[in-house]
Amino acid sequence: MNLKPLGDRVVLKQLEAETTTKSGIVLTTASQEKPQEAEVVAVGPGTDEVKMEVEKGQKVIYSKYAGTEVKCGDDEYIIVKQNDILAVVE
Image (cartoon, rainbow, N blue to C red):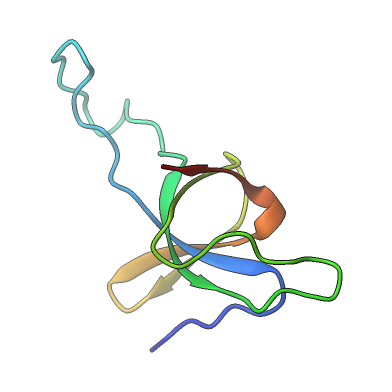
C-alpha cells in the first residue's frame, strides 16, 4: 500500500526517539518524549494558493501536536499540512 497525499498535505515518517541523553543517561520508554523530527516520505501536489516547499527525503521539524497518525502495514506515518512543518533540517 502506498500513501499519496492530496492538496498541501505531506506524509512524514517519524525518526526514532533518543534513548540516551547527551551526558549518557539512558532513558526509559516512559520518559522519552515523542520526537518532532521526521523524514518526508511523500508530498502532495499543492493548491492554487499553496506552493509546496518541501521535497521527499528531507528531514523536517513539525509542530508538536500536528497531523494525523496513520498505520500502513507495519509502518506508522503522520500526515500533516505543509504549514505544520516548522523547519527543514540541513
